[in-house]
Image (cartoon, rainbow, N blue to C red; front, side):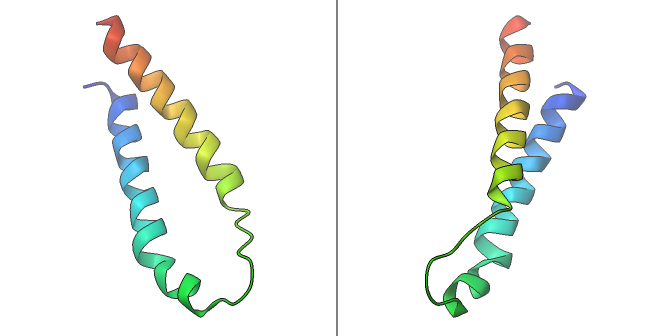
Length: 60
């Protein structure tokens, strides 16, 4: 595995930790609509990492 693929795995692991562990309490306590500005940064970064990693994987 390349360094980029390791970084991608770590980024997805960190995202799942952030989303399902750290924000679970915050989501439960918040009333009304949730406006998640952090997703404007997280989703594009994960998408770019996933595309680059997939390209590297299938190129080999």
